[in-house]
Length: 210
Image (tube, rainbow, N blue to C red; front, side, top):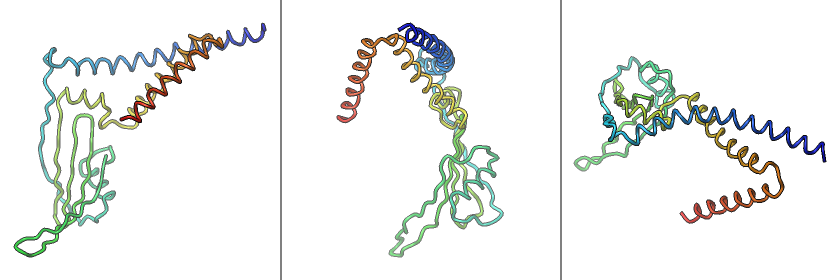
């Protein structure tokens, strides 16, 4: 009995330390998302300029023909725009022929590639046979940048992993918090298990009914 009590006490002390450090990490990231969420939620009261998007278009000259390969075109557009980010989406589009005055006119193949950065997006399009690539650039203001950061739009893998660490910390905090509340007592563990099981079933049936 004594050994079991000591082991349980040591486990709870380690669990409390883990809970505290994860709480500190979650609080730091939660503060960042809380501030951006607060600004977005009260942008009208605080008279923050509404999200605005400035759109412009330009062309990139092509020195040699481009093959109908969306991945190769995406790499070409990335180099042409001097971007470090790989294309968010790259694809090929084969439009249906158009009937003009009773004559079927075939339409050229189009290659497209999209790039999304925190404050700017690029949509590139190349029509097979042209000597240029059309580029549409969309820049957002400060509020748009906050919204993109909050949603993770255009962010790199490091930012995604950072958000995943916050999600993992919240899940672990919930588990350690429940274990600390139960103090590893069988009656409280049973009660917590029943409560979580009931909540899980409620969520499951709610999703099934949607």
